[in-house]
Image (cartoon, rainbow, N blue to C red):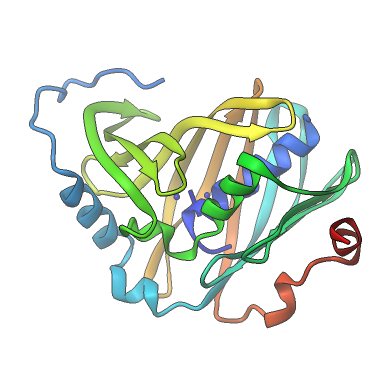
Amino acid sequence: MLRRSSTHRSFVLAAALVSLSVFASGQTSASAQAPLPTGKQVIASHLEAIGGTEAWKAIKSMRATGTFSLPAQAMSGTLDLMSARPALMRLRVELAGVGKIESGYNGKVGWTIDPISGPAVLAGRELTEMADDSSFDGVLYGPEFIKEFVPVSREDFARTPAIKVKVTLQSGTEQFEYFDAATGLYLGFEGTRATPMGNVPTTEILSNYKPFGKVKLPTTIRQRALGFETEISIAAVEFDTVPADAFDLPPVIKALIK
């Protein structure tokens, strides 16, 4: 889940925020006739695949480091993504030819800073999506986060037989999410992301899951939006090392709020 740093959603958020700062289709598979599992069964398989609810809830914070790239433009840089309970996030990307791009959520305020548009405080749907993506336990698909979770079909997603699920969050956000039909792992989503230019159709693909401690996380996250493709490659993940002040608002953001 990048829906997910920390959670899958945090990984997703990283790709969305950076690609939109720079640049302000599954087919039915042969197994389509097989009976669909229930929503509870899909979630249970997913939780087992990532290491279980108990292992996830034992984690207080995460820090993921790696690279962020735009392959078609031959651009790349470093990525540092931190998150913590209950819904805290801080992202830093150093992109060659662009500079430092930052964003964060402190449980109330969502913000971005980049060399192109400068500092900004998020509002409306952009803020709602950042809050959703920053939810540390969003990966668990609990009732406090998910309003509806309805399997709709079996389809190939990123060349993998998958269960397609219509997901509605408690915030009202709707999207289609895909889970590996064999392993239960979360493969990605299709939906829209709010941007200053409007709602943009977006596809996110997660792959190359690896164990980190007692949980399993994706290490490759690709996003397609606005005609561009971005890629995150996670090299290392640390647990419970994020300092408490990591999510403090930068001075330029505090000035905007005042």
